[in-house]
Image 1 (cartoon, rainbow over the protein chains, first blue to last red):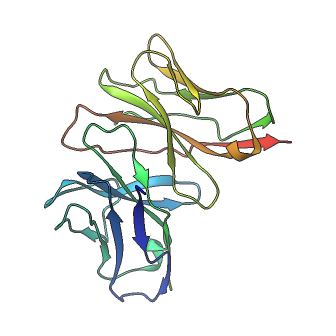
Image 2 (image 1 turned 120 degrees about the horizontal axis):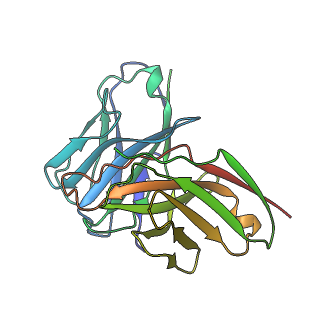
Length: 112
Length: 113
């Protein structure tokens, strides 16, 4: 089954404790993205990647890092999480000319 | 980046058609119009997209104004399962440097039984 998976689905952590949210897709898509969703603000793009080792900032990249060492994986790294990064995070993938983005199920992160 | 404007919420009766409007007055010639929806507790899912001509698929129809400054997503017979937030998005598929995507706040559709 074609899908985007994220882990963990739920995470509660404390300020400053480094964490990684993993994202994996099995569709051989070149493009992958990370979004955060906050009440009243909709979905905002954090980072995106056009292919292995090629990444670029979205609208809200501050406080986040990403890497793309393999085509299928696109982890989101929070080196020093802060409470304002409490949010619902979505990973997505698509082909370069693909009109459909496939979204993962989401990761709900709480930073205390 | 071109932005879209949608009503905050709309209400519909079950089994009736629903017309969800979207304004995108600053759309560029290479921007495709996409619609996604997000059901409660799920990630967004693709609904439909178009460039200039009206489009139909199994989920919905997309009507695009002649000047492309607005579009309308049409659900022909709303069901309770269609209750979701609907996002109208512009994506420049010619801009291979990015695929930068801007989601607005969307329209929350309520469907009454």
